[in-house]
Image (cartoon, rainbow over all chains, first blue to last red; front, side, top):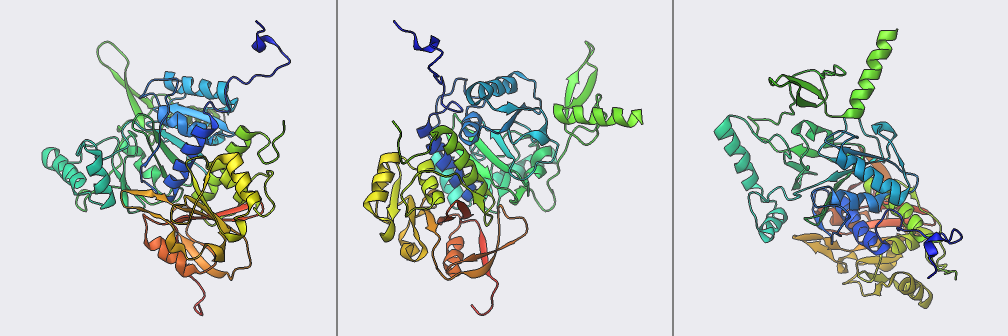
Length: 293
Length: 190
């Protein structure tokens, strides 16, 4: 049999550009545009099976795939880091299927796919930030029925969420929720910011970049357009507070970036480092420049 | 065999076009450029590109009277498989401003599913334009643009989160006014 793939005269593209077929992309693209028109509303979409397990960013990867253009410069982060398994695999996936340029620098990237962090470096207009979302419904743990949560969103009936936050205060003296802290988007829909630390919540507000959210297993897409009001839920007497570990990064010395706690010795000694590896590298370079002068 | 009525490289060109649409929808009131393609003369490049990029056999498309020609229908159905439909069922509608009126026949979604609403593609024509200020998501502070019958856009934004989403198309140029945009008329004479 004539093996066509070995014939160099025939250029066989193994994948469609950015993996997904055109019909799937059309369906996702329609959902994305409606999502941008209705900030914070979760648009259902018929999520495809992707060549990776659920929970590894199948939603994010489908959104990225639908948005990617050949001249994009892609950055992928997992918990702020460019060099963890999930980030490396997704970056390689799009290098292979879309042949796009990749970078670790936030400021050089035109599209950033992220799991659980917003980069420390300020984003710019027309940059796209794609979030991987495990549970897109902020009310799901309070009300398991989709028919009910859908009604609650339709009626802006968010009393239950405030009761939950109030119970936190009654039990612990403060709002215990430290990640996936619910926000209200454009004064209307309560939205799950994906499991980013609440330290990152203020960055969502009035951000010049385009924020897109994909939940593959749960089959939902939602968006926060640029310059959109995003308010973390709180009470007048218990205002929202972005917080982080009160230490300095032991690599770059930064005290204003979000820190990961790491255990460095058998007797449990702790150290703190920036979760955003690109930001940490940048700060380290700035420091060494200052020392040189 | 070359297909006369299509993107030259579908996958690449549709992605570039969609990116322009993402930008236009994200930054309402700003002009963005769309790629060229082969299409019926009566359609602008931008309107044709929106249809080709977004429509498939699940899309109901309403063509207003001047656009409801055999050439446009054949082109649309051949390239996308879309269904030519009436106003009430349309997901997408194409026409010049006057021919799309009245707007209240288009679907604006339901409270549980606000996305089940029509997207209107408005081709440039000599409609009377009125200066408006717009603000809202995607707009830094405010912008000034010109809109036909601003009262209809104001009514539409009052339906939020329901409502219609608009794209104004002119040759290669595209500008979006989604339902989330708030409009106020600057000229007091109006």
